[in-house]
Length: 92
Image 1 (cartoon, rainbow, N blue to C red):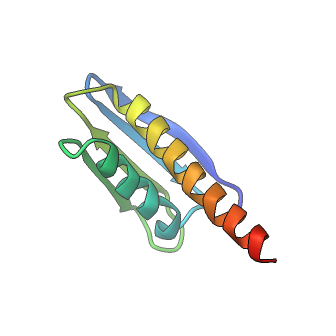
Image 2 (cartoon, helix red, strand yellow; image 1 turned 60 degrees about the vertical axis):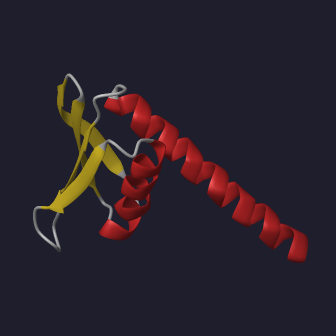
Image 3 (spheres, rainbow, N blue to C red; image 1 turned 180 degrees about the vertical axis):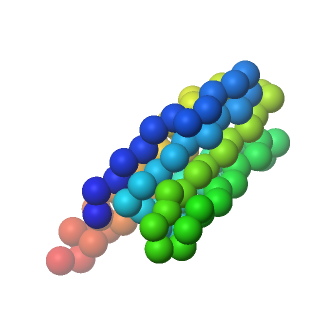
């Protein structure tokens, strides 16, 4: 899978990112992580066509720039996956 993303729209407190080459399985954890970072934020996505895409993710936040919120959410996911990898390597 090759992930392609681009910012489609950015306004104060809101950003829309378009993903191509991904499924909802890729974006679900990202949306959840964004909401864990800022419980007052709004994060959601829509899929234009279930087979062709693209997938649009919108994040709104009054407390902080949404792109920073997404970046921290990505860092959290990477950290979680690194822990899983480390746990697996210790058992192998």
